[in-house]
Amino acid sequence: MKNISIAVLSFIFSFFLVSNGNAQQSNQVQTTTIEVIQFHSEHRCVTCLKIEKLTRATLANYFPNIPFSLVNVEDKKNAKKAEQFQASGTALFLYNNKTGKKKELTDFAFMNAGDDKKFDEELKKFINDFIKS
Image (tube, rainbow, N blue to C red; front, side):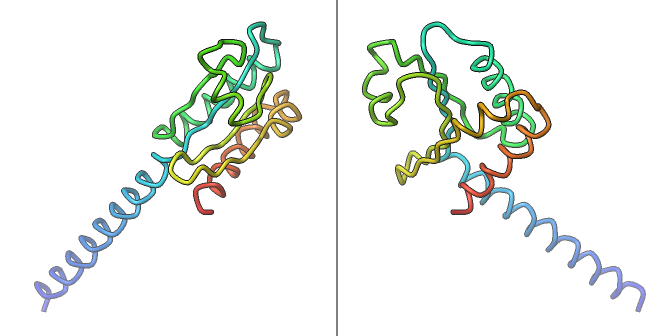
């Protein structure tokens, strides 16, 4: 009887590990199509630099598989991308490169760049909601 109980518990534990691993793989597959893009001008203000720092920290801590792009709107090679997002200066976007879906976070970023904790928590929520939608 004891051997049967151990076998059943081992099976349940193994099933849990496999299920949890599949969920993590599924989330990684979804997040690889998402990227965070920050547009900026040649001359960057303190707030623009802070937005970059906080965004990179949030991605490193919670979403290491989501790429971050820093795009200078004044560089002619970035003109097409800047036009696609209608960015002419500092702007922060979530972007799904498979569906073309965008979420602009510029107002959020400027309003919360002075509060590291709030920026981190809200950006994390925006990203999770964007992934789910």
